[in-house]
Amino acid sequence: MADTESIFTRIDSMDPSYFAELFAQDATLTFGNGEPMVGRDAIATGSAIFFTTIAGLRHRIINQWFAEHDTIAETAVTYTRHDGREVTVPAVSIWSAAANGLIRDYRIFADLTPVFGS
Image (cartoon, rainbow, N blue to C red; front, side, top):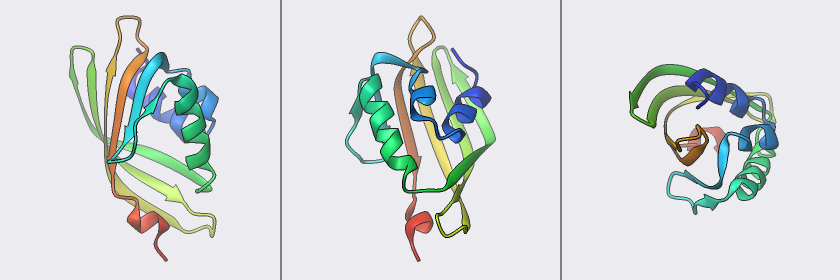
C-alpha cells in the first residue's frame, strides 16, 4: 500500500488517472454524504469532474493512525479557487487497503462550503 504522503501527492497532482491507480477495480470512494463512486473508472471520472471546480489543492498531514489495513488521516487541505483565492479546511480521510495494497474503500469528510462560498 502507498504511504499517506504519496496518496495525498497523487490527489494534489489533480491527475485523476494517476490518483485512480491507487484503487482496486471494484473500490468505492465516498465524499461526505455524496453518492459513492464505485469502481476505478468511476473514481477517475468523479475526480476529474471535481478537479474542474478548483484551480488547485494541497494536503498537509496533521495526524495519522493505522489499524491493520486501515488508515485515518487528519489533514488541512488548501484549495485554490479559480479566482486565485486560497481557502484551507480541515478534513479526515479514511481508507482500507486490500491484501495487494490497493485501496478498496476510501471516505472523505470535509465541509467545502467555505471553498465554494463567495
